[in-house]
Amino acid sequence: MIELKDIKKGFGDKEVLKGVSASMEAGKVNLIIGSSGSGKTVLMKCIVGLIEVDSGQVLYNEHDFTSMNDQEKKTIRQEIGMLFQGSALFDSMTVEQNVMFPLDMFGVGSYKEKKKRVMECLDRVNLTEAARKFPAEISGGMKKRVGIARAIVLNPKYLFCDEPNSGLDPQTSLLIDKLIKELTLEYNITTVINTHDMNTVMESGDHIIYMFEGLKQWEGSNEDIIFAKDEKLNDFIFASDFLRDAKEMRQMEMFRDKNWRDRLKKNGKND
Amino acid sequence: MEFKFFHHFGTYLLMLKGMFSRPENPKMYWKQLMQQSVDIGIGSLGIVFIISLFMGGVTTLQTSYQLVSPIIPKATIAQIVRDTIILEFAPTLTSIVLAGVVGSKIASELGNMRISEQIDALEIMGINTKGYLVLPKILGALLTIPCLVIISGFLGIYGGKLAGTAAGIISDDEFMQGLRQELKVYNIFFALSKSYTFAFIISSVSAYYGYNVQGGALEIGKASTTAVVVSCVLILFMDYALSAILL
Image 1 (cartoon, each protein chain N blue to C red):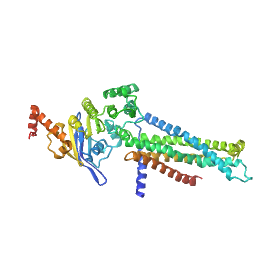
Image 2: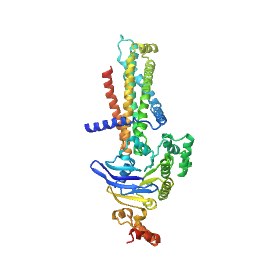
Image 3: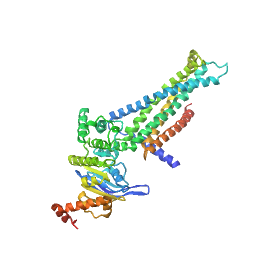
Image 4: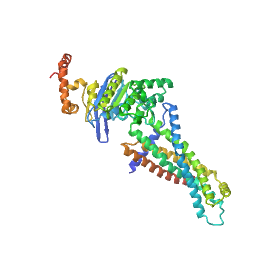
């Protein structure tokens, strides 16, 4: 579990994060959404420690990451896997070597054991046949999958994904979303995704944090979002006529479902 | 302007300090050091070979052009060529060329890794990126550049001999006799001192500019150019300073 307590971060005169508090649970896909410049990338970089916070705390299973020394941070970081927007694969290494790199660096097991683990991870992302290829020889979607394989090779407790669907076609995006969701449940990982993609929001968002101008504007699940009253959130999520129509259809569908009606009544969202 | 200098200098010192921590896996660091040594050393052999031969040849021709007095023995030409190459041309000229070849490679490689988030990926894994990426480059340069300077010295003198005999300025025997006259071992120590200093400048300054790139592809080019220019200026400055101190 990751907890954020009153995170503030500024660059020069500009205050990017103005006090964000939230918690991200294990075994759930936690999404950070928001328009460009809302501070979601800075927030994610603060959580993983690539940017130091001005004030506030980031707690990994109740351990304060912000007050740790470099050596302690290294220990936490070995429990973190991260998928970058551009995949961040090492150009000079093959797919197999990229995935094996964390195992090599932290000396986990013999070569045979490492190779076995790498092939397991590549098999999990359906990329065993691309093991000998270089990043320049594979597609964007495949690169993302290699990035995921590299991120999970050390069995991380926390998985961070920075815009995992950027630059991908809708079908591949869905595939990546499905894969991340499956891995989160399979390994009980605390997954945090920074995204713009509405498919991801509606399909994978167990827990969603909507950022607006450096503050947490709304928090809930993908089911809550359909009935959310927050104007800024609705303007952001359902920006087009098509999406607004889709939202209404989904609302009607959910309302027809008795279980849902009961749940909404209980939560007072049936108005 | 002066604040910018202090900012750069401070960040540069912090980068150097940050390189020293316990390696996550010494084997991987060793592998990286060997890789960098091959890239810097073997990768630059061709250009060092060419410039050294021509540098020696030109030095012989120009020295003989200026030494027209019949009183001065021809062997003096070889002596001047030897000392000029050992004291100045082999360490300084080779280092300036290497600042272009190796410096721009280091800066653009690290800059590209920074822009494509590969450095961030290593940081997230819990790896000290300064130690893993920068330190092997500096150590690789310190290992190989002095060797390249020594090779350059031999090749320069050989080039001088070739040019001298081919042009009929000096015979083989006279040249060899000149080479043996009044050889000061201190000059070799001086040349090696310079080569270690220049190797450190080339690798650390280029690594600094590459490691701290911010922006996009354009900035990688700018960082690469700045790294070469700053390295060359510092090499010339240190060349003067070391000559003033050590000679």
